[in-house]
Image (cartoon, rainbow over the protein chains, first blue to last red):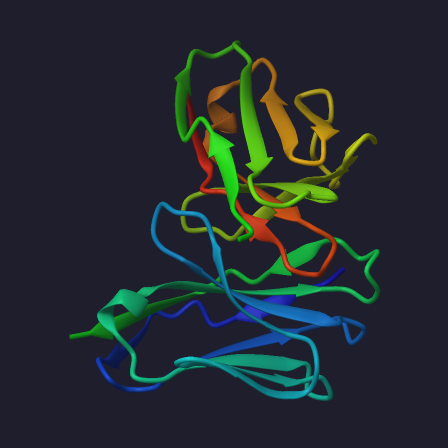
Length: 113
Length: 114
């Protein structure tokens, strides 16, 4: 059984600060890792994917993956009020045949103007 | 790119009726589509996975006779909630995958069963 753990928050940061979101997973064979953003009442929106150890940057977002520690994080630089949402960590298994995404319960982020 | 639509966005129905939800990939061919359900303040729960032209694979605890899934083409999958009851009220979200590892979500359908 794959498990994905996130701190539910809420996490509050002031505008312009760095928001750090963390996720751990139980299946050491997991290969693909994703961060989704979900606004209240809306469906998830993919913001980052990462497949290999290290950092991946895209604009204000940086995903960090450490497979040895089974840990993946998301950093949001220069946080904006519009970043206030629930961030979902998702993980899937080894091989392209492993279709399913396993989601954490999400971390609610509030960026204070 | 990678746009997924769902219809309807919101539906209210009486207990005992059936409701069909459509999921379409608009600008790509989806080899696999997924159906999720999300209760308030909870995370997404995968209900089933469907591949075009084959039967859906249901997750444990999901009744396949109650939640009928049809994936008739590479751009369309439908979920039919049969004989809906109030406990079926939820946010139903589909996602689609072209062939890579990323899933793209539709906007969701909020079902309310009276």
